[in-house]
Length: 200
Image (cartoon, rainbow, N blue to C red; front, side, top):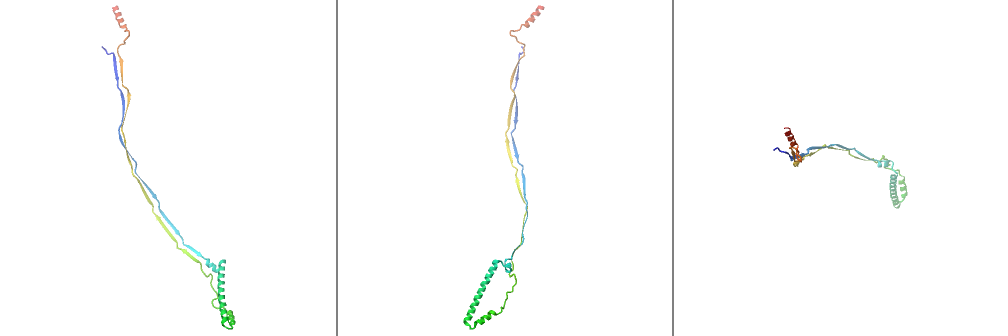
């Protein structure tokens, strides 16, 4: 008897993607940074300083008004002291010596002797002060600074991964491969046999 059904099984199809676990190492580059500070030569020069004060020298030639008043006051005081001393001396002579007036008048009429006040002007020189010159030098060499950056390493663990995707679901395919079945049954085959018998 011939089989009437054809059964076909369609298996499931799937696709798997596997990613292995790995250990990654990342590092930064090491480097060297150099900084340079320039030096130089510094010079400081202080020239000679001269201080010239001619106030007293000018006052000895042509005094100022204040200085002239002061000098006149000193001379007046000295003249008053000298006159007081002379009058005291003459009074003492009048008390002790007879005919002292003739002697006093003769002394007053005498020609002056001694220093006559001849002098060179100015009588004093200028006041001079000075300071020594100074030269200072400062030299500074160049400076170098180094900055070293050490490389740093980092380890990173990346775990594995499995991905599965189903591309075709399982299935069962049933196919009828026999002759057609009629309900009610067909009489065609019987009709053909009957007609052949009749012709015979």
